[in-house]
Image (cartoon, rainbow, N blue to C red; front, side, top):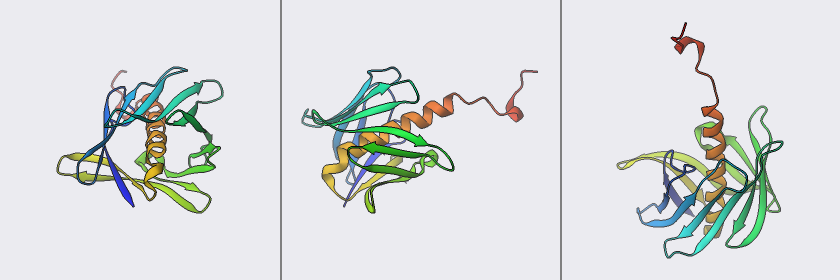
Length: 170
């Protein structure tokens, strides 16, 4: 079982994001950007090899993302519904994502098998997302999925109006 650490609120931003192990060793580097059709995030091993990437393919009827492991397409991710909670499905892999997406506490499953568990942790160096991934070879795809969920979460929150109790523009 492996744990991967990502500095909080840096996962889906248009900046370089470093993914580390529990010892603090850098394992992956994620680069790219989101926002328009065709944008992508790429995940590289620290030796420079591309290990996975995820590409935004649709803006109509909700966003969809194609997931690639190295250069082979392994799945397409989309939001299925959001009542009573968000539910995401990755076609071809037959993975589902369920849980508290808003607080970064969710799991990815393949039927009854847990693929990944996302949580938060506070360490001496700051606040982190912790990805608990039992099968290490699933890590690149799981990191890409977590980046999409982070993107959807913060994009959705940026569009919300300020609550009435905080408005001072009479």
